[in-house]
Image (cartoon, rainbow over all chains, first blue to last red):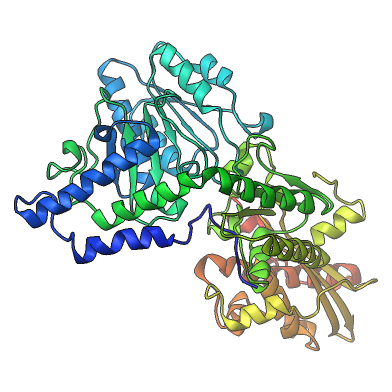
Length: 395
Length: 142
């Protein structure tokens, strides 16, 4: 049985998305910037897609900027707010310790340029509170940027509350919603979100395309200079097939949101309950405010890469925050940020589900994971030391 | 998965000589859990010949495969031959390892040397300490 349980990495494209892309190759192949009717037809398709995307997020079409994906949108949002802030002498940015690298590395760059970055602690409940944001805001804060939901451990942040606090304080609020869009109901206006990043391939759309929502009145800084596309804020001929595929995928995801949430949550909860029975393991992430499809555990005494390789032999595609899976030496910064020590952070497993998964597949995972964990523990000197009392259990 | 050679996958999926030797003549452990790799080697030695070898490994697929291969390469060999085992030979026997995984074959070599050093120490056999680079020499975990 083949079980794809790595939907937080990327998803299989929906039929609706593929079908929406095809006419852009065959019929609407013109350049939307061209004056002739072939170009203008493509322009119409582009603007129709923009209007539909805006409707899905609760904003105006002119507030949607199509990008190459989530990373670009994150970079542009943060850099733009920083440039605006610097002009007013405001060079303090608030974020969280478990952001995606697209955000963290951009913040690192700004720190080197003289910005002061406050990363909110996420050890308590593997999440942040709106109160933490309020307490961190200063006179010179030019941006609050927090993810909507964490990609590794699934915690959903209190976005509407953070949005309200930022609005009151007059601080622009950006959210990296790459893991949330298409999986959680979002309304940027109601939630007081000023900027939001999204990526199509996380909700069964194509790779290489995403969008930045930027509230009217907030000035964007270009990352890519050139033509006047995207209201002059993002040069380059528009990826029309990608954009149409993205909008179709999101329309479908939003239309089925409630139904999918119920289905996926039931599978998630069954997996969490079943895997929790493995001795000396711990669930990572907020147990309540959690993405419907996210399951993340640390298992003591084993290492994540070998876990993934063995699960692959069972036909299960999963992910881990182990150092060995990244080529990096440190385990995932997210797991370290929530307080997992290196020893157990190496033994992490993330399963991320979509509505395409079935209860049969969940049963398969539930039979495979305990067997694989036991197999690896059986050859682990760490596990032997734990069992013989030479080493103390952490979990 | 194309990440590893068939040999690596074979030794990872069907590791040889996994386990513990009670009353081993030499035991060596290298690596640390913080770093994500620990290898432990147990040796049974009779008349300078390694008559049995077992390993336990906490680590990634290539760490497990490297331990497995290394134990196979020294089984039945003299302790002098075992001292000559290099990480390069282990990696080659596995049909190569990805560059960032070569460290795993180094650990295998070190674990075996560590176990031999333990044997020498227990039996008062003199040796050149320079033959046994300890973990501190490696910058892997820094």
